[in-house]
Image 1 (cartoon, protein in one colour):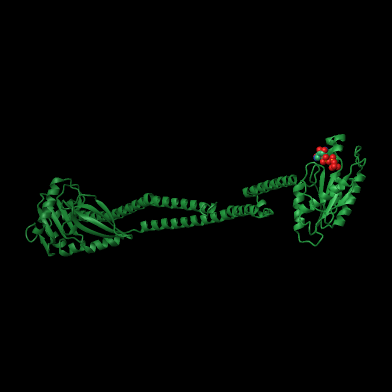
Image 2 (cartoon, helix red, strand yellow):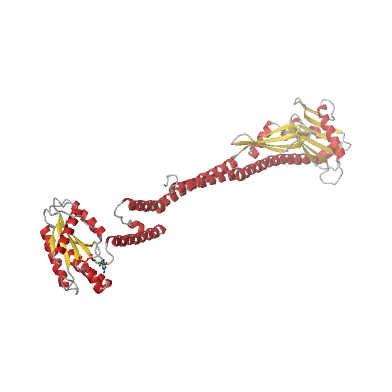
Length: 528
Ligand SMILES: Nc1nc2c(ncn2[C@@H]2O[C@H](COP(=O)(O)OP(=O)(O)OP(=O)(O)O)[C@@H](O)[C@H]2O)c(=O)[nH]1
């Protein structure tokens, strides 16, 4: 018995759901292990590029510082000043406004012997000081002087250098040898400048780069130079450490970056995922609908039809829309129909064989009894039915004289003639014994039956089938007993017993005659 779970529809649905789940799982795994790493990697390279941009902005500021210090260092007035020839240089150039205009914290001139020639700048308290050496009140410059002297002694290639400074406050420093502008000569001294990197400068850097960044001085640390921290779904913090002075200190660039690219990629991926999922589900629904219409529905109709064959007495016709289909179901339906037709015709043949006498082709006892019972069961007005019992006279002699085969031919000839006469009236002739026939006459009275029997007798005589050694007549004759339904003959058995008795009466009376079963005659048992 097919359960609902095992129906094709449910199995197909379950299989599709399974495939869908596997596809979703595959999609999740691909997203987790293929797409997400690519997105994160892309985000890291974006953060790196943004930090590069911030660092390039710093480099550009350092270059600016380099150009500024070189402008002053390659100025002949500066050359003369450190060579001790232009004492008015201080008054005309080195004053507080100069530092403020150039956005500097300090300018330091060293002569060729690396002695401090002049210092101007703001001390730790922000007071402007200007001195011919690093003595008070300009002693705040002493550490810078010591560093510069060490640096020049270590690297006397007379190149311009720039540095980021990361003390408690940040700054930028540049150092250049002082040369004459036109002649090739050795350095007459060195000029150093220091620019503070304060909050307003950082704000300006933010405006220039468009990056939300912070610069902070920090001690040098072990670990990666660049790090990325995703602080929220919308923002990440990227920082990079840039070497600075003094040794052991770094400038930490920290950029707060939007995760737009990641979010946009994620959104695009989600969008594609939802659409793919939606299209997949719609496709599945359409496939299911098509399956239902093209396969399952006709199969159910076919199954319903085969079930009807079991339950209905008369086989219904196969629905036209099934047999006219041009697909496999149509082929199956047509094959099934032709198989059914073949089986029906074989059943019909078997039924015919089981209800008819193989020698004469007329009905046999089985069909006769069946029809007789039917005739009496119908609530029709009287007369209900009559019956005849016909027996060929001296048929043993016929066989003995003409042979058994001729006897068969005689039986066939007689049967055909009698059937011809009887069937014209709707009566049923049956061969119920070797040379014995019975006739059912539905709705016929005894008198009418006797008249039909007499006509039958005459017709057989008229056949004039030779029976030379018959003591009755020189042709084949029959004896007929007739009985009809009445109160004391209410069953087929009783009526046939009475007809049989009448037929024996006809034999006794001399054969080739018709006898009726008379009222009050005792019935003898019917020999069968
Ligand atoms: N050829 C042939 N003979 C059959 C067939 N069936 C029965 N018979 C013969 O029919 C004969 C019947 O003989 P009986 O019953 O003695 O009766 P009868 O010779 O007809 O004599 P009455 O009935 O008394 O007139 C037998 O010889 C059977 O062999 C058959 O199918 N073919």
